[in-house]
Length: 120
Image (spheres, rainbow, N blue to C red):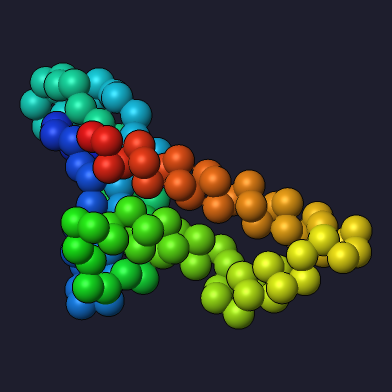
């Protein structure tokens, strides 16, 4: 879902085991329907109604924030059992090689998204 804000968003603790990450940021001009006033702001596109993307992550510290956010994003598409299987299979067959290539590309996109978020 897409949501807009006047101020930039990064991440927010949702509960003891989840965080919201505000990814896919774009700068936008928003017009408020009630007042017809426009303002420059930011839009986020995630799976939650506020534009956030919810991930599993707990006990976050400044030292491990990046790795836990990346792991949480990866886990949305690849549960841990799938990750283990893909990595254990490696590229021993053409099918496994394709799975591994897709996983590694997704992992890199998660790293890029988290790095962009943390650089704000």
